[in-house]
Amino acid sequence: MNRRFSILSVSLGLHLCLTICCAEPEDQKLKELQGRWHLVEGRSIDRLDPQQKVRVERYESPEVELSFYGGKIGIFRRLEKGRIFNKPGPFAIEVDPSTAPMRCDYISYPIQPGNPKVLGVGICKVEGDTLYIAVANTPDDKVRPKNFEPVLFPNGIEVGIAVFKRVKMMP
Image 1 (cartoon, helix red, strand yellow):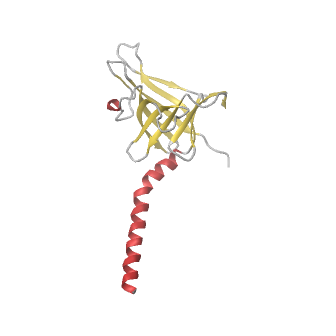
Image 2: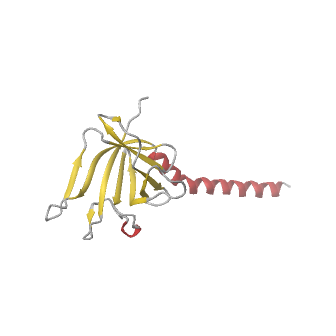
Image 3: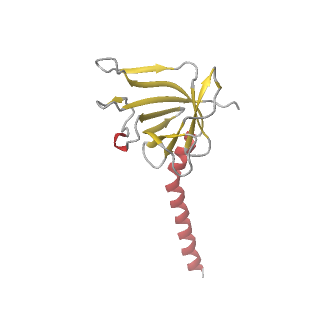
């Protein structure tokens, strides 16, 4: 009886340990995303520049907010003077925390049950209170960004970079 109880205890403990160890990185990535983020910088290739230099736009007052609340879907909202002035949309972002860097797709919003329309494919990462998103302006997974550098392809497909800062919540 004691031997059978010991084997059962060890196998249950091992199962629990493996479950926690394997699930933790995805849960941690989702946890890091939760909350509100303000767009502070956009990077893209300047199409009008013959040398196609990187154009950087900085936003002193927040114009776009991205919010994650308890899941893998982040909702974009436009801001005016720091306040939300329109309903969510027209798109959202869906992340896949099982990949490194996390895959993310810009999808149509409101989301249609079972079939969100993918508008663009990308990757994202969180470093401290900064969220980086690299996204291609196409649903074609073959051009999903591999890094966080802007790209302009000859066929007009563009990879842009968005930098967000976490909104600090009042204690």
